[in-house]
Length: 101
View 1: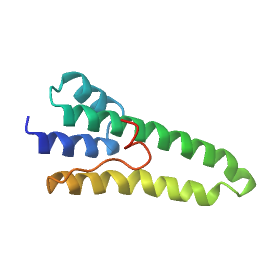
View 2: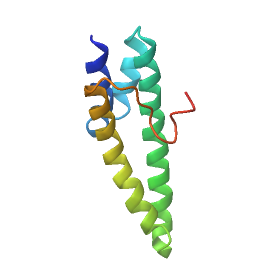
View 3: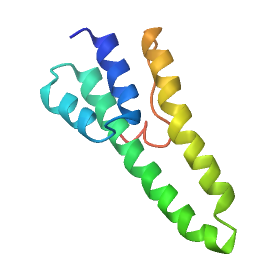
View 4: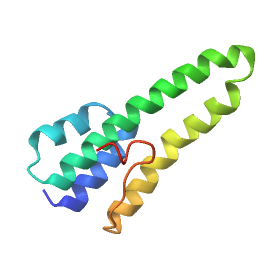
């Protein structure tokens, strides 16, 4: 599969299969760029779910509501930015976890 469309699918998977698709691409791809991006996408989803969970817990005492709003927006907007960058064939790393991989 062409690298550009593989990246688009990995980014778009955040909306339909955020864990399954990156794991499959990591296991089945031979390209280093695709493997690196799939690990980043997977880690990003795990971190965002964790942050949303913590923010939801703290929203009972009102301190978590702003964080909850920001993290939910990030979970939606960041994959869209990744899709746009992949379509333009620009190199891009996920925020927060991009340097981990």
